[in-house]
Length: 366
Image (cartoon, rainbow, N blue to C red):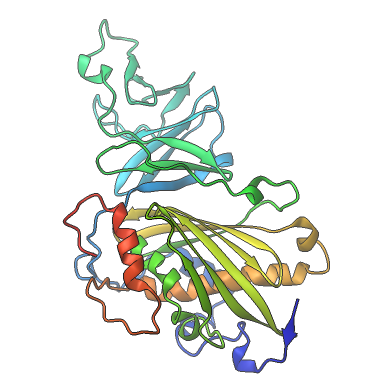
C-alpha cells in the first residue's frame, strides 16, 4: 500500500460543497429514513422524460434466504404485481400475481401445495408456467387455463440472490447470469446490506458510471480519476477500471475500482487499495420513476476482523455516502436524449449506444 501526503480538500471523507449540504446534518436515523422515503416535490414521469420502456435483462427479486421452502411472497416490479414461491423441491417460481379465475392477488394468503401455488380465493392450483393443474370442486378445468400464461418470468439463483428475467415480449433469457465467486466463498463475510429507494430511472443511474467528471463535483474527489473502459464485443457485458486516489487520515492511498455490468440489471464492483471489498449491486425498477437499490458488501474475513477492520468498515460507509450523494440528483433528474456534453464528461454517448440494445422497441431514441 502506497501512501502520500494529502491536503484536507483531497480527503474523500470531507463533505463536498454541493449536494452533501442537504444531508450532512442528518442523524443516522434521519438519513436511513431519507434513503427510503418518497420526495414530495419531484416532477412527473412525463415532465422528466422518463417514460421509456423498461430494458430487458436479469434483475434481482430478493435474497435467496428470504424465501424458504413452501413460502409465498408478493412483489411489485416493472409496474407489475407479481407472486413468487419456493416449491417443496426447492425451486423458485414466479407469476403475475392475479388469479386467472376471479382476480385474487395470490401473494396475499396464497400457499404452496407440493410445488404448486394455491390461490387463497378458490384454491385453484398453478404450476410455474401459470397452468392450472387442479380445481378441487370442478369436474373439468377450463381449457383456457390449461395453457401457460402468455408472459413468463424465468427465475434463477446466483450470488445468494433470486433473479428473474424480464422481456416485454416474453422472450427467453438471452444470456446467462454472472456468478461472483466471493459471494459464496467461506473466507469472505456474510453480506452487509444497505437499501435505498431511488425516484428516477435505471438508465440515468447506470449512466453515472461513465460520468468521470462527477466524481470531483459530487463526491469531492481531489481530481477526475483515470478510467480504462471495456465495451465487450457488442454483447450485454461491459466494464471499467477506475484508478483513484483514496483519501484517508494517513494520506492518499492509491486504489483501483473495477466493475462489470451484465445487461442493465446485474452489476458487481471490486475495490482494492485500502481493504478488498466486493459490492453486488442489486437494483430493480418498480415503476418508470422508481427503483429499489440494495447494496450487498462482502470482504475477506481476515481483513474485516483483523487490524484493518476499521478501514474495512470505513470503505463501506464511504461507498454508501457516495450513493447518497448521487441519489440527491437522481431523485429529480430529467433525462435529456439530446444532452450537451463536453470533452471531459466521459463516454456518455458510447454508453447510450451500448445501453440501447436492451430496449426492444426500435423506435426508442436515447
